[in-house]
Amino acid sequence: MTRSCLRLHFLFVLLLYCVFASSVLKIDAVSGIAACSPDQIQALLQFKNEFDSRGCNSSDYFNGVRCDNMTGAVTKLQVPNGCLDGILKPNSTLFWLHQLRWLDLSHNNFTSSSLPSGFGNLNRLEVLDLSSNGFIGQVSSSISNLSMLTNLNISHNELIGSFPYVWNLTKLSFLDLSYNHFSGAIPSFLLSMPFLSYLELSENHFSGLVEVPNSSSSSRLES
Ligand SMILES: *[C@@H]1O[C@H](CO)[C@@H](O)[C@H](O)[C@H]1NC(C)=O
Ligand SMILES: *[C@@H]1O[C@H](CO)[C@@H](O)[C@H](O)[C@H]1NC(C)=O
Ligand SMILES: *[C@@H]1O[C@H](CO)[C@@H](O)[C@H](O)[C@H]1NC(C)=O
Ligand SMILES: *[C@@H]1O[C@H](CO)[C@@H](O)[C@H](O)[C@H]1NC(C)=O
Ligand SMILES: *[C@@H]1O[C@H](CO)[C@@H](O)[C@H](O)[C@H]1NC(C)=O
Ligand SMILES: *[C@@H]1O[C@H](CO)[C@@H](O)[C@H](O)[C@H]1NC(C)=O
Ligand SMILES: *[C@@H]1O[C@H](CO)[C@@H](O)[C@H](O)[C@H]1NC(C)=O
Ligand SMILES: *[C@@H]1O[C@H](CO)[C@@H](O)[C@H](O)[C@H]1NC(C)=O
Image 1 (cartoon, rainbow, N blue to C red):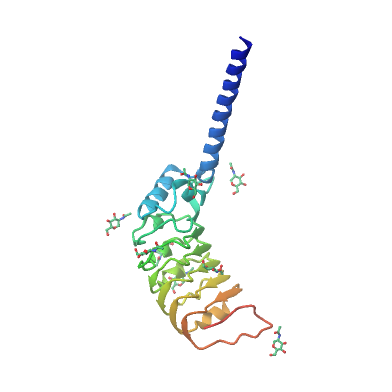
Image 2 (tube, helix red, strand yellow):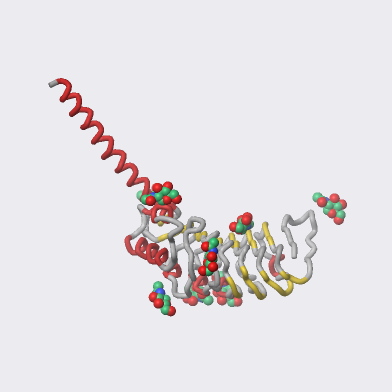
């Protein structure tokens, strides 16, 4: 009698523990997207499904998502390394996420995609990291639309041509263009950008070398 009672008690505690543990795990898994509205979650899933995403599961993918807790709109998307494999199309669902402020797609495989001009629509972006993705072609001047941009990293791709004349990205603070095939003169407007504190141009085909007084700037200018 006592023994079965104990056993029952034990089972009950075990059951409670299981219920508790699974709800904690569930909350943990969705905490990143708890604030997201259903249509935004659907857009995020649709974006993932545009690619071969065997490199990551949904919980890994959604771990990098943050939404505005008032509007439910996606404000941050940090796709895990090696998650997405395929072509980033000009009509990708990504370009519906107009409230994005932070987008990190680095170390995925968009080999042979050119950089769609749709990035110009994401004009709330402050941080844009497209490094190490196999992007080809020229950088569209539509990025001059990204007036809030402080960090731009498009290093380690196969980008060619000259870097667009984005003189009006006045908040730009970090710019990494290294390890591409950019050519032409080093864009001199970069030197007069008010907040630019880190500039990496190495491993490209830029012509000429711009001398920067060592005392007045910490910029690295290499060709
Ligand atoms: C997702 O993948 C991570 C490792 O990348 C793993 O720890 C986790 O258990 C996986 N989750 C699911 C639901 O498969
Ligand atoms: C919404 O987020 C802000 C910061 O991003 C935070 O201060 C506030 O407490 C949050 N509100 C709710 C209801 O979670
Ligand atoms: C994008 O366009 C292609 C055709 O070029 C179409 O097959 C695809 O469904 C479209 N994707 C979206 C998200 O609209
Ligand atoms: C990246 O994609 C290209 C083209 O589809 C493919 O040839 C290559 O193997 C992929 N690389 C990796 C690391 O998956
Ligand atoms: C720039 O942003 C506006 C919305 O603010 C949009 O209508 C326009 O198409 C964008 N231009 C480019 C080149 O992306
Ligand atoms: C840009 O991305 C590359 C590769 O992901 C990384 O090594 C580099 O540190 C990044 N640059 C900046 C300024 O963060
Ligand atoms: C920067 O100038 C281009 C035209 O040169 C314009 O299309 C773009 O909207 C401007 N961006 C900002 C942030 O003013
Ligand atoms: C900067 O350059 C001047 C000569 O042009 C040199 O005397 C000085 O030591 C340099 N300062 C640093 C921090 O390298």
